[in-house]
Image 1 (tube, rainbow, N blue to C red):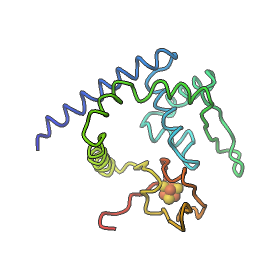
Image 2 (cartoon, protein in one colour):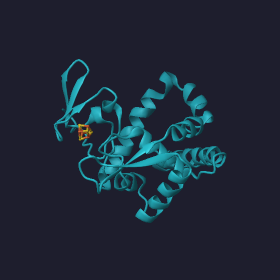
Image 3 (spheres, protein in one colour):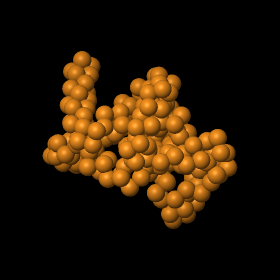
Image 4 (spheres, helix red, strand yellow):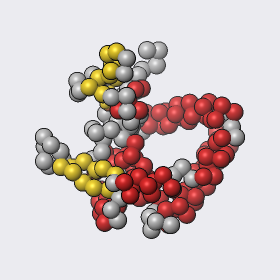
Length: 190
Ligand code: SF4
C-alpha cells in the first residue's frame, strides 16, 4: 500500500479543509478551534458536553480550551449550565446563535460539493476513514468518541427504545447517533 501517498492525500485534504474553515470562521470572528469546539458540542451526548471531555476530544491544553469557551460564551454562542446532581460539573450547550453560525460555516460548501460527486455519496470512504481513525486512536490509547449506537454498551430494548448498559439510563433515537466520551467500540466479530 502506498503509505506515503495516502498520508500526503490526507494531509493535503486536512490543510485545504482547514483553510476553508478558517475563511468561514473569520466571517464570525472565529478561529478553526472555536468552530471545532462548537461542532463537537453540537454532536456529543449529555455525558460528554463538559470542558474536560472537550479538552480530550480536541487534544488541546486546558488553558486553550478555557480561552475558547470564554470567547464563545462572550459571543453568545454557548451557555454553561451546572449539573442538576453535581453542581461542580458544568455542561456546555450551544445557543441558537451558535447553531446558526455552525450551520453556515461547517462543513464548507466546497467539501459538500466534492463529496456529492463521489460514488454512493462517499459511504465507502466514510467506512474506510472510520476504520483508519479507530486504528490510530487504539494505537495511541485514546478514547474513540464514537457514535452511541456503535458502542458495546448500547442495548436495543424495542422499536425506538434503547438503553446505555453502562449508566442503565434510557436513550432516545436522537441520543443513539451522538458522540460519547465513554464510547467503547464493539470488538471485531461481534
Ligand atoms: S451506550 Fe456507550 S456510547 Fe452510548 S451512552 Fe452508553 S457508554 Fe456512551
